[in-house]
Length: 242
Image: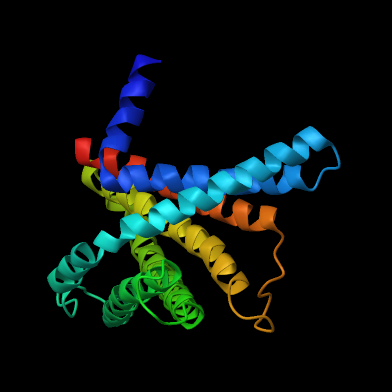
C-alpha cells in the first residue's frame, strides 16, 4: 500500500504524470457520468450530471495548463529537426510532419481558449475546428509511423528467427527487446485510434461519424487511450530504472 501511494505521488509530482492522471479521471468521469445520466433513477441521474460537470472542469484545466506547452514542443521539434538520426526515410518524414502538426496545434487552441474567455475578439468555433483538425492529423500520422515501425520490427524479428541456430544470450536479449518495442508501438496505435475516433466525433456534422457518439462512448474512447498512456509511462519508468 505504501509503495503504491509513493508511486502515485511520484507520478503526480511531474507535469506529464499529473496531466495523464487528470486526463484519465476526466474521461473516466465522462464514461461513468454518461452511463448514469441515461438512467431514470433520480439519484443516478444527479450523480451522472455531477460527474459530467467534473469532467468538463478537468478538461478546461488541461486546456489552461497546455498554454505553457509551446516551448517544450518547440524544443522537442528543434532537437528532432529533420530526423537525420532516423534509419528509415518514411518514419523520418512522417515524424517531421507530425511535429509540425503538433506545433501548430497549440497556438490554435490558445486562440480558441482566449476567444471563449473573451480575452480577444474573435469567434472561437473556427479555431477549435482547426485545432481539432491538427490533432486528428497528428494522430493519423502517429498511427502511420507506428505501423511502419512495426513492419520494420517484424522483418528484424524474422531475421533473428533465422539466426536462432547460432543464437546466443545476446541474440535472445535482442529478440526480447524487439518484442517490447513492438508491444509499445501496437499500444500506441490502439491509443491513437481511440483518440482519433473522438477527434472525428468533434468535427462538423456530416463528416464520417461526427457528432454521433453518445457521451459515454467519448468517455470510453478517452479512457482507453488514457489508460494505455499510463501503462506506457510506467514501462518507460521501468526501462529508465533498469
